[in-house]
Length: 141
Picture (cartoon, rainbow, N blue to C red):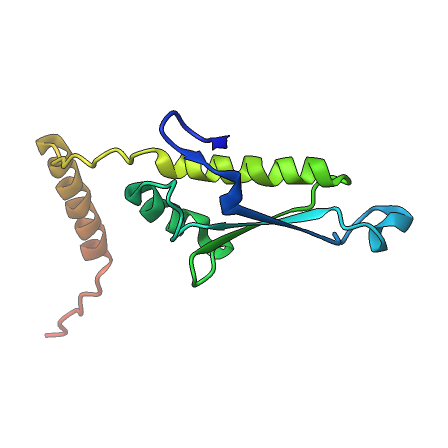
């Protein structure tokens, strides 16, 4: 079990991990050893996630989530499988923690009388400036 918050825990059987070859530095080992981790987590069908967390997680994941609702995290920062595996799990837990935070409800506010007056005064000043720049034709009588 991977404990995410006090109320949310994910069973490790819900996560599939696949080791792939990582691009980048690694010397002679880079083409031989599969050290990068591709972690897959089915967000849509996961029994561990509450519905409100699931709804917030899908847009939060962005491009990392497929059309089927599978979250894919690739970790290739380190040169060892174990550190990349732990990095991928840490990134998944952090993402779910962010989704578990309930957004603060927006409270409606109204502009103050002073701010309305300031706005109208600046509009009036701008109008006066433009009016003085206007071309007024002279009458030749």
